[in-house]
Image 1 (cartoon, helix red, strand yellow):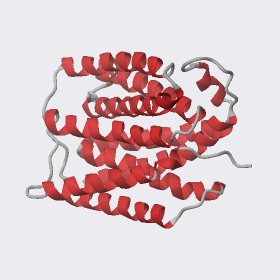
Image 2: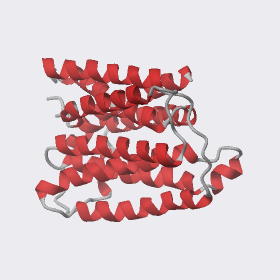
Image 3: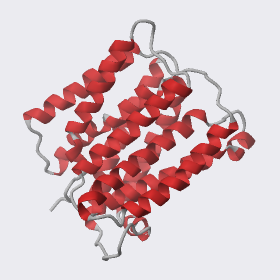
Image 4: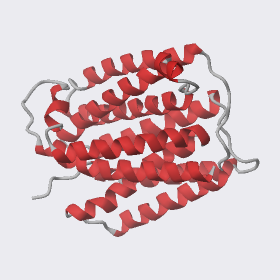
Length: 277
């Protein structure tokens, strides 16, 4: 199980560095004034080398995340991914950001929460789920895309937080699909609806988060993204997928999860990084 923890931490580091690169790239792209969420935004940011490099880091993080999801409970993996904001905060020092005492405290708290989770976790559960669960994830991806499109047309005060939450739920679907993906053979992977959920929900999440990054302050949006990507899959993992803690360690796991996520929320402002001057 130790190597699953290592993979979760590698994913957090990769995603954290990618966030800085992508935030700078998204802010460097001009808003063409289109109403709502403009899918062309992804094509514009892809012309930015920082965004492409960030995507490469995302790919590394995703592979590490998939490996971690095969051996660890979702609540451990998703809390570790939320902790990527601590990595983002430290990486942001390189482009001129300043960390205050509260933020250094939050970084230490993130590490402490992950340590508690690591001590309390056991190997992931093995509750079987049927094809219906896989199909439901794919359907949820389509519904989420529609909700995100509506959120993109909401008032300015609502749009950023709503897009952040939709992006977080998209990342949650990616995690759930990665957990239940049938990897027994190439044919199984290609015929599993979870494969297409990973691709579709990943694009949905990136598009809506890129939109939130580009349009206004996204500190609240980033916080809601963290909530969306951690709480939902963690609950589903315990209720439906057999995730559990070591005997007698449930209170420690709960404390570690709350500490790690709360500290990540305290670092939410690092979801928005101004481009270097």
